[in-house]
Image (cartoon, rainbow, N blue to C red; front, side, top):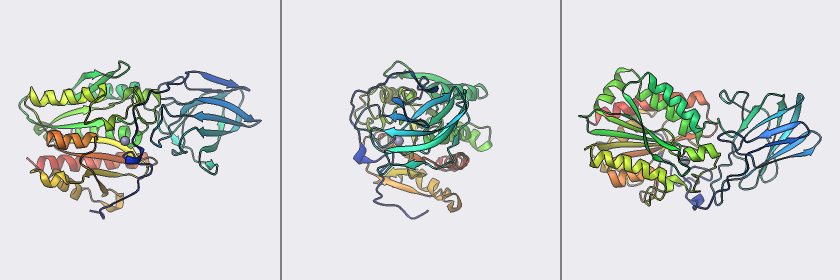
Length: 395
Ligand SMILES: [Zn+2]
């Protein structure tokens, strides 16, 4: 295992305590297409965030980006489409009303295939304005902080995946603040007691870990390999592929539609999304006799990848010792896979709830904002296989 990292100042990490937020009413913003001098910019799609659009001078335009509410973490999400009546190259500035530029812009011409912007990003002195150069045509160019993965995109992927996997069952665990479904997918054997839970994308901008790594991990665990088949014979799997669909579709920087940080709500359970997950899981335990052996919560931070584990070493308290065995087996230096970090056990995070209330082992799985996407998938598949081996070894 790589050297244990302590006392790191995670200024922009997803779990940074100093940035913990309050539940303040969110500003949804106006859905519209701005048209100035033949250049159009639109936020009329799920996942968009564009609060204003102005022309600065003959060849420069500026997009204003604001969070859904404050205080909020420094996860300055932006996403909009831009096009022009005539082909032209413009300077495009992203002006943040709060916090600073964080994400390397990602570009797409179809909303599905994305590439990181590969030119220079010019920052002003306090990094509140970032300027790039884009070539415009009459076809929309998506400009976004990360790949736009809305609830619809997620459920389309899920339905396609489930189609070839008869053992997977999709259910609604509850409703979100705005009435969307909280989806849960199960692989379950009636006679199998030991169970595992995946939670993904509580934080809307955290696409690399919350969606890309999660999907690869989940696909591996639900694959046709001997290991995965054996795993599923011995463990049930309950998966929440997008716990914050409202936040993802609103283009929020952090919160759900109530302005609440879902991953700070696992003690008080004030929000319908966390309540839905808790109620589903506790029903499995109390009414169906299941036991939760392990929970994984998928996130992304500025300086991942790493696994968050609890300060009082739940792996030491547990009889099964899945975490130490898993960590030992994924210590592959060449792929930078061995880091893990400790967190306070009393915090209202999802994985703390698993340990403190369910006596499960649990981790928060953190990817990195700008990590190569192929590397994210490779790591997730390796992690998943080693995790299944560690789970089976615990029996
Ligand atoms: Zn997070």
